[in-house]
Length: 367
Image (cartoon, rainbow, N blue to C red; front, top):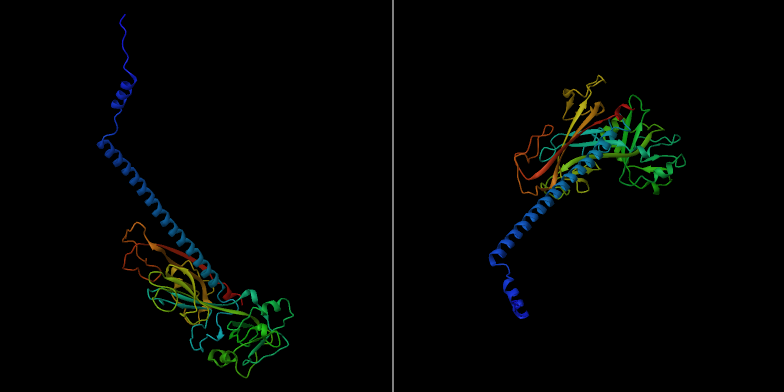
């Protein structure tokens, strides 16, 4: 028998070390390249998804802005005329210095720098309605309007009337016609003496429209329906100036509360509203207007015709707060033609959305 001699332990370890080879430089280069390719691909997918998520957020913000803008516009326009028959005399009327408000709906076609419209609506605040005290007869030039603070919830309501607010009263017993009067409140009703009176600016009686409805030698009706007067103007601020926060890069839907717009005390409502276009369905006197017929719609309301407005159509152009995250500029990225406002000729990277609604104006036919 032949006995084979086994190699020593040290030789066996060394043999294994020699046979255990590592990666070559070429193999390492290929491995690093493939790993880099995979990482870059994953980063590209992550970046794309991040931009898409941000674009979705911008679209969501546009939709939310649109809902809020339509809600406040619809609610205010729907209330137009409550407490009147379409005409209001006194401050902000035809005889006042600014002449902005004479009727419960005033249209401004192409008011803005980019052809956007504006609208003024006036109405009586329904939650604060009170009747004047029947035992007190006040002249047309009065500086106080008297209520009974012990009647129903009048005490709490009187506490809501502040200096600088408007007092609107509906005189349904006026001879020959129904009149609505508008005064400026000169002091908080809570400080009036005796409590229950609201102090108003009597100079309203010197205005031509007021004096024509209520002569200086005449009296107001003993019982009138009164409340806080709401006069709101909605418009687009898209100019670089000291009035309002709007700029061409960030147009804003604004609300004015004193009939003197634009002014630096106006309230910004919704960002990135680029255009406001308003159309009116006006009855020609037949009291059976069909607002489904396009010919019954107009872009303005003529003076003395506010009470004949049956419906108001609101168009709003919303714009994304930022440009397309992909950096693309398409030929379709322009402010579209809406209403009687032509489209913009400049393309940019903003997304846009147009929302439209129609509001029925019912209050003109309640009195």
